[in-house]
Image 1 (spheres, one colour):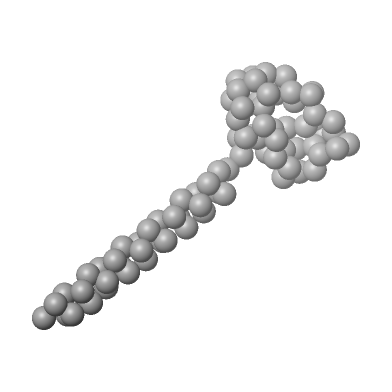
Image 2 (image 1 turned 90 degrees about the vertical axis):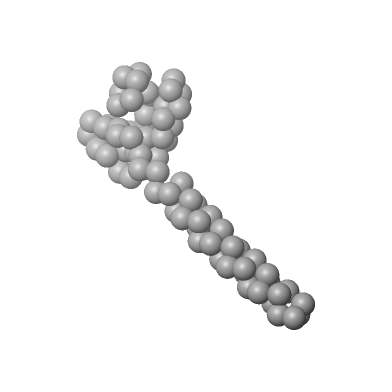
Length: 81
C-alpha cells in the first residue's frame, strides 16, 4: 500500500510490479504520480514535463505559422504594385 501525496488516499501498488520512476494515477483524485521509493513504496506528484513539451511545440509551430502568414501578405502586396 502507498499513500497519494495529493489526497492521502490509500493506493494498492504491487511492489514487485513497479520500478522507481514508474508513473500511475490516483484512482480517487486522478493525480499523476511517480514511484520515488520502493521499500516502502513512496509516491510523489509526477512532473508534467510531457505537457510542457507539447505546449512549447505548439508555441513554436504557432510562431512559424504567423511568420509564414506575414511573408504571404508581403508577397501579395508586391504583386499588387
